[in-house]
Length: 286
Image (cartoon, rainbow, N blue to C red; front, side, top):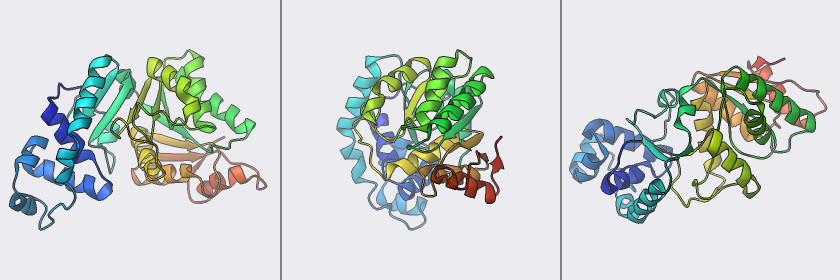
């Protein structure tokens, strides 16, 4: 990571807060003014010019609100050489994610940044996976790891956990990256604290959320866009018709990534989402 002073880190944290509309405005401001400190030093009138009449409502108060978070983050960074913060422009910021439609302005990471430099495939699927689905996810992950491909998933129970576990135990050159929907000091789900630590030691765990952020429902679709953005392809192993994995598949398709799905029997609710993906044009994975 680049060495960030407190005020610059605070500026990045403030710009990165908020949803899609806030991120879009923040990127326009950065493009216009050249850097985060220059953005916050600009006047309201200058903002209005940069945003073509939009005042950026709700952005300005975030700078002061991020003071204590910046201090906490700097202490976290100093606590371990495996703790990282990557902002746009950092040489370690993953190129694939940078080229996606909605790259995070800031990424928190714990583990080995080298994991970001290899080709990656996302393996995602149901939290209520069948034993057969978990075995298949593990087999696919192990084969990818042997080939030196990084396996990306979301640390959830079910297919995600099976993919991470297989990558860690296969002994291949490929690593695994977990993308989470909370701050990196608030592991979710709690039963995966051990898995989180093992991934952090051998691969990488990343989040766009500041430290202390709990895992809220609205954050999981945001996480899914990062899973898709980091990967050259997304494989859905099992998914119901309402599965969040279908969101990941849609976002991957919109980002120009390949999407594959594992077919299943018509009687299986866990295969209904995969079968629909294939019907809609996803590759059939055999």
